[in-house]
Length: 125
Image (cartoon, rainbow, N blue to C red; front, side, top):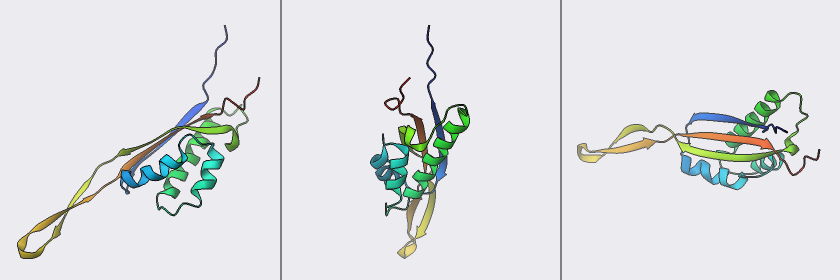
């Protein structure tokens, strides 16, 4: 009987002070890509959250290499299995308005979760 080891690892960035709606635009562009190709593409994004998404992807790839040190894994061998952007806590603030009124301000945050696995199409045993 043959047992297969699933080579995957994840990284989580919590309480990122950017709205989930804006970060999802960047995450959708690199979902399912090769890790090296995704990092190259994120370098040229103009959105501010591209650097944060790249940082989490690099961390997940490093976690996979650390978890399976006996395997020779490079960024070209890894693929983004899942990337999720969840809403975090919302800081509620008040903006003073004319005539004694107050307008609410919502400072949103998000959590980024990236799972990276080895690309099985390149593996030939």
